[in-house]
Image (tube, rainbow, N blue to C red; front, side, top):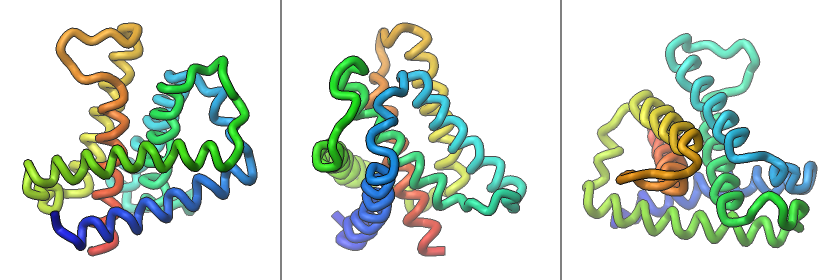
Length: 180
């Protein structure tokens, strides 16, 4: 495993986790009220905005692509938390609980990234950020379809695997952008 990749991965995660915990200080875990389809729509809005900014090369709102990729990471972690915690339980998590859940899912994601990087030889380093954006949009479309099928798949991976891919593609995009 490339030690630089691990360092860069951890740096991106630290920035995202900082935003996540600061927002919990401001808003609590108000996101617990979101239904899965609402979370999916939020992911779609962020990914579509990234694609629009990539194409137009100008933001009239003043928010940048990096912030949107970080939002994709955090909302995907929230999605993973929501999958394991039904909406009728513990709507208000304290900051410590919410942080432990975040760390738990990021640890799983990091292990997944290391396994895939081993098997794929860090192919993502040769990809364009715009291709990563398109793959994220495809993953979101797949999540929507699975939701429309009441969560049932015949041969495909479940929603959680798509959230995990969105997290890792977003981290890779942020790493590539920092190197440019």
